[in-house]
Amino acid sequence: MKKKISEIFEERFGGHGTFYASAGRINLIGEHTDYNGGFVFPGAIDKVIMAEIRPNDTMTVRVFSIDLNEYAEFGLNEDDKPAQSWARYIFGVCREILKRGGVVHGFDAVFAGNVPLGAGLSSSAALESCFAFALNDLFNDNKIDKFELARIGQSTEHNYCGVKCGIMDQFASVFGQKGKLMRLDCRSMEYEYFPFNPEDYELILVDSAVKHELVDSPYNRRRESCERVARRLGIDTLRDADMEMLNKVKSDITAEDYFRAKFVIEEKQRVLDVCDALNRGDYETVGEKMYETHAGLSKDYEVSCEELDYLNDIARECGVTGSRIMGGGFGGCTINLVKKDLRDKFVKTVVEKFTLKYGHAPKIYDVIISDGASKLE
Ligand code: ADP
Ligand code: MG
Image (tube, rainbow, N blue to C red; front, side, top):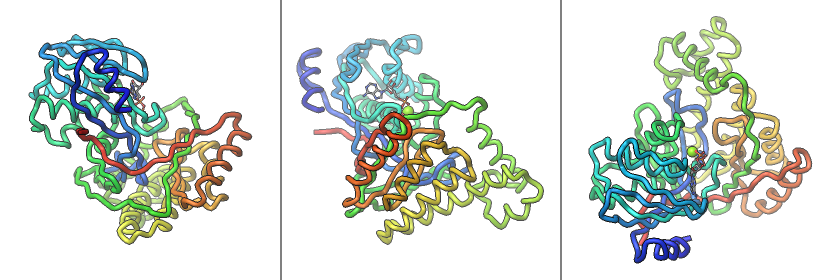
């Protein structure tokens, strides 16, 4: 990828710039916990967006996307917003840095990536954090701290791409380290690294390539359930609840609200249990917790779908160590912790069975926990 970028940069702009990269991410466990003040547990992966960038002594940005074979040119004022949606991620990052009092001048850039788009691995966060990291290095002497770089990416999504996302994706992309997952406390924004170096296991994503659009917003309804129960318990978020507290108010709340809150409370504990297990190198327990999360998401939180439950069943039948829905639900990927010697058999079985039942093959991505945003030599 680097060679291709370098060739095209030289051809379009002459000479060379500096290389930067940032990564997509997975979330091992901790789903629907962010808006409840709980924990998420992401890591950066070996799928990246890479860019060669060089200041051009003007106030114009000139950028070429290799994967889309498209060129964009834009100024740095608010009304210079480019037409191409991919270029808005880069424009947004420039604007958000400027809004925070940072420096951005014109630059030339060529970029490419191998984070699958729209598969739940957050290619958009990889793109934002690659440019945020680069512009901090090139124009700001790295004075913008890393958390702010993540926020710059998040604000880009909110203000220039119409996506009201949380901070996890950009956080993971900026802070990711090889062989480490990060437990982010979504209430205090404190984070801690945990080792993830499974010698005998691999992480495999199975993308169902389905997305069920539901009529009423199921996401908002889940949020409302959680908020209702928290109010009933007299606390800010379900972060501060436990099962004893929930069971005391069981008769005052709807069965639906009860099961939503039960999932959130149990999921918080599962993240903590997985952290303990990783400190012991106990990947079997990690896997069990992943299955428990899937069951909770499917039965209590009701954000699964037939296809994802089927993928989970196949994983179990194959003897996969852990498997669960990754992401908001209603489609997308499962994340699977698979013994290395089972990998080929599992992939073959899951592709065959799923294709037979649903008429299209799921996509398979092997991922390794890797470094996030960085400058390349
Ligand atoms: P994801 O879940 O992968 O983040 P999004 O829809 O949020 O999906 O972001 C995908 C968008 O990010 C693409 O439509 C494109 O605008 C931009 N993007 C991601 N990767 C690339 C790439 N390699 N080249 C150009 N644009 C990209
Ligand atoms: Mg995205």
